[in-house]
Length: 111
Image 1 (cartoon, helix red, strand yellow):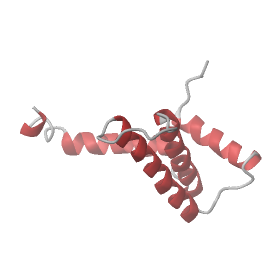
Image 2 (cartoon, rainbow, N blue to C red):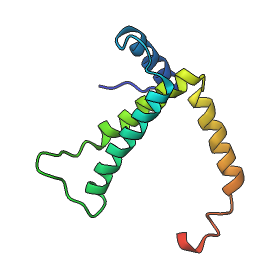
Image 3 (cartoon, rainbow, N blue to C red):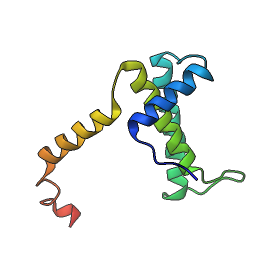
Image 4 (spheres, one colour):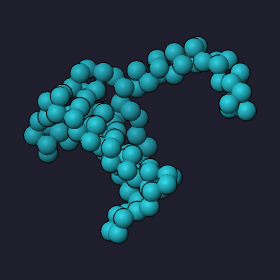
């Protein structure tokens, strides 16, 4: 059974893994390229599962794993650049709430 994990815990666990098993972080630019690659892999699964494409022979629906890969590399980049993702997310939610509190309610496209 999986335990609950906070974003801070996730950042700590990834950092520990990188420093004990992964030896060291890849450079920030390499990790940015890897993040782009992982987002592409996620997009491929989304296109097949929810879009008009179909899975090719031998392909599997690995949506959770692809999302976790994206999160992993994002956490690596946050750790490398000193970003506290938990704090950043809370500030981002507040920003979006203040900016968009009426915007989406008043959007006729969403009704």
